[in-house]
Image 1 (spheres, rainbow, N blue to C red):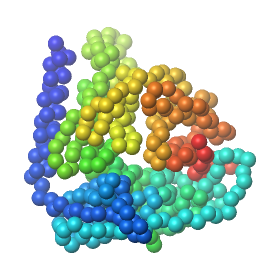
Image 2: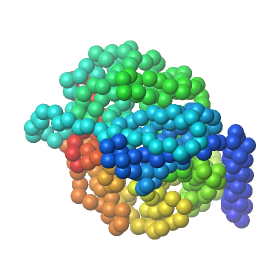
Image 3: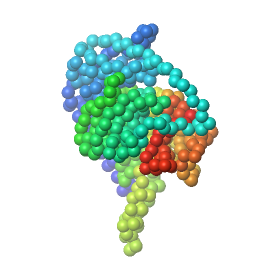
Image 4: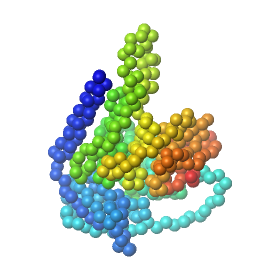
Length: 418
């Protein structure tokens, strides 16, 4: 009965929380709706899946199959940024609410010299005087938080292409790490501030700077974006209930997507007072309870194509939803019960594939997850590189950081074909 009462309280709290979100957005300044059509500069054909960001408010949109888009702004004129993997990025100033036509130019790709290597693993910055602290993909390129000449006192932001050619660099101070938000914008986090990283085709810039204390309230809550939906999560009951919901920017509605709960751990949690009443219960026992019984549910949400996937490892399921929040289907899984499994889900957005990670004796292997059957595909080994860090996958390649043997405190970025 106490559990049901607590659960009712949780959902009442959720309702109030959702009402507050909607009310605050309704109370905010009335937004101006901007409409446009994005076409190819040469063929004049519409371009689908162009990412669009209103620079001041950070509202986002994506062009439909017919190249059209609608995005909100609080003021006019409004500056929007357009980006697409196959086209050159562009910024446009919109003066009125009338529909505009925007032309994008195709990116040109020149093939450089081909190097034949017996080792499939490539050190992207092998001959560069940079050691990598952190990295994130930035469009088709890569942003590094790096140290020059092996000096921890010379942090820099460096923009590289995937072949390791430096495009732009700028020195920074008190740098700690990079953060990529749900709209694919990359931010630099320093000791005191957070700034968005922006490349204007000539130089790297730090824009929209605000105190680091505001990071959680501005960036962290949003975990994924699809169309006008921004996806969030909230933990309840000592991290044993996980709620996913989304906020639709156009309708200003907050919608519950799904709730995941670990019933067994919740029952264990109810016995905590009895366990704590034992005479031998000490600080070590308390920390153990927090780490084991109250470890947060791991059920990551990922956008894959035009669907939302929730990897519900608590209940051995992959749950698939459409943009309207309807559950389309579910797939049974069991690979996560293997002892060597690492809690990591990697999405190759360009190819629509998903991988998971295993590690034994410090060496890592990857397996593609069949999203129809839930079974694992062939194993891809990452040989001779133990204890790698920050694994990412893009367009058929796996990327990772590795500490060199000569200078183990410094890292380089490697990539390997899958």
